[in-house]
Image 1 (cartoon, rainbow, N blue to C red):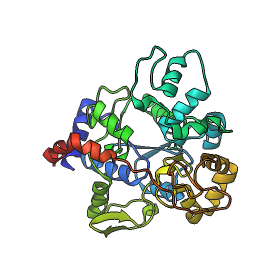
Image 2: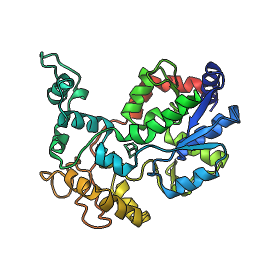
Image 3: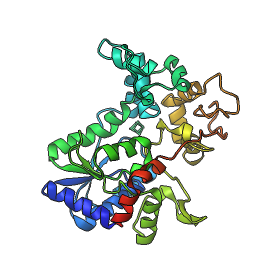
Image 4: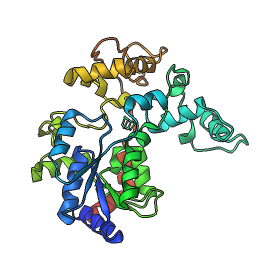
Length: 341
Ligand code: SF4
């Protein structure tokens, strides 16, 4: 915690205390806000009400003092209709959008996405290539894009930031994903003074376990959506939701073991689940995402969900084996963290 406090003090000093917390009401940003206010008691928190938060998150946010609520110009329904559904991941959605929306300006990048090299034959990193397992989505009868986060989260927060001239402190953990690990490393650590979008992420070197330990030890209030924090096999876990975020988001559901986020919604919030599948059109999206060439039991691990025909079809989805981004991160920053604590 001393590490996080120091980064916050440095960030605030660098910006003459003109800083704010980007507050989602989730457990990470709840911990962040608590630490920030132990250093800067009057620091404002800005909450983007995207219309995609669990009711329990919104209820909790209402109880937190000093929270400013901002709203996007578009609703999620308008975003998926006008811009496209967020599927698989931001990176894959962006690649699919580019390939399905060809222009002269994006010709080279489209070639790289398709072939892994430039039209001149210059090899590019494999990360630029659209993996074969997602290519069937090029034929999806619905629009796909990565622009949802920009429209629903970044736009309202950025607008507030421009008007207030304050600098953001965000509760992201580098261990959350490869993209976040990469961003943390290339931006120079917790305080990204020189990034394209400068920001402070003082919990950058924390893990989810660190967050849960903090909540348990301090007993600060957090959203009821998580349930209780209990210990199991030496690790802490929540008895309710593990992650909150946007309830209708399709990013990453193919990575979820067993019951995925949307399927769980059918059990915990049936009305919202029906709205998601029928009114927002996610039934069609999820059914299409089940590649027809996949084995019926989903054992290839590439599908997002079994056929979604009813309110809550549950079925285990095999998860591809992969190295945790945190393992990669530890290799580079393990000593860094130990030195800091
Ligand atoms: S997390 Fe998903 S649903 Fe939420 S704003 Fe981003 S893309 Fe949209």
